[in-house]
Image (tube, each protein chain N blue to C red):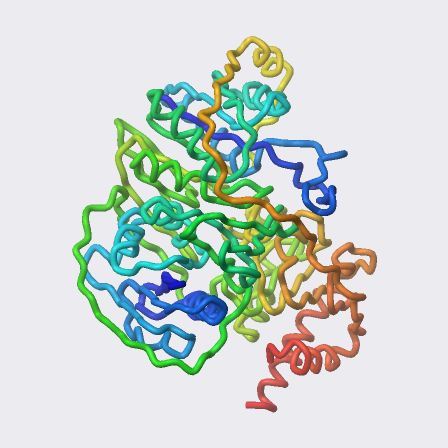
Length: 318
Length: 248
């Protein structure tokens, strides 16, 4: 059973964290069912990087048009350069956009938002996210080929002792139906969906002018910044930072919720977090019920103190 | 300009989700159903387009008769007419096949869906539709303008935004940003009365089978009791972050 992975890169050609995760996920399937793992990247600067996550073959594609995302063209090229029974894509915005096109091109069934390794491969059985984090659903697929998208940060990456063959290939790209005029990327920020640590704040902060300490804390922890729905609705923070049932669903190693009461819609979006730390002045805030660690206290005192302690810790352990 | 807005009916966001029948089915007892929040942004955008530039706004859903109150609500908010495709929705491929058959038989310039439905989170129907119809596709769309058969859009990407241009017809998967939360409309009395007179037609299913079979559900594992740390003893927290959570 051969697996093909879409290994996503950023604008500098570096592999995203989800590429390592997707490749090691594919390797696990190969361990279960045999077969080879082929990773396909578009414009990667150092394709051999994926070797240690279990790729047998890495095919790096180049060609001018390929540097701009197009769901139909990328799906077509991917289906032409590598064939397998299982195709694995990260459930990033690009991966999710390509997946249905790829499924139709390869005559495959599509399972999106997988959150764990398959429990069986033939027929494929796997758990996927449902109810925006309030539940999980196991599905079975009675098809010879499957395209599967993997929730980012769901299983993490694993290193394998593996030798890869690397092939560089120039491909002919057709014309995309949608033309990308420009791309604006936040520089130096950790992406929310793939962050290991997320620092999130709610209405308890009282106003957008108080986010400085949230950003400082995030910087110290190499974390992404997030917020609750009311904060994004009020325009204090951009929509792209809204975490919850109608915003982003995330699964970091540590989620720090500051001044967020913990409405059911918010909890849904963060239930996949491995650890949750809640800082809130209200000891009855429902979020404490869903937390691993809690600090009851005035966030305007606790957060600056935590920042000071972290800085001291960094200095001592530098 | 004909706009088709695809609507999914989902449990209200405040719902507690429970499973029944030995965890094989979603327990709908006590659940109130609403328009999928992501679909509402597209619906409101389409009504705004009609007000600004003129357009006909048709809403469609795939579902059995029980979903009609949700379609009436869509009409009360402002859609001109509504279509119910008479099939039990099973998976994204089946739903997209039903919708594609309707779209191919119609004359739509733009099809708008939500980014995903908040119940099964497939986020695959819009992409399948675009692939089946061979139309341009934009997912995670946060801004959209159309004029003279051309569209400009912004799309959220991981860590940023893209500005795009493409010809119509096209399929858009929208989210917050298409319109703002405060722009969303609650049906008023006049809208509700008018909705009763607007056409709601039923279309027969083409009978595409599902490809994915649900094997059962589970809820996320409950957390064990919270470890409370005194706000005067944050050194303890630092110790935990280092030893147990391993983030520092």
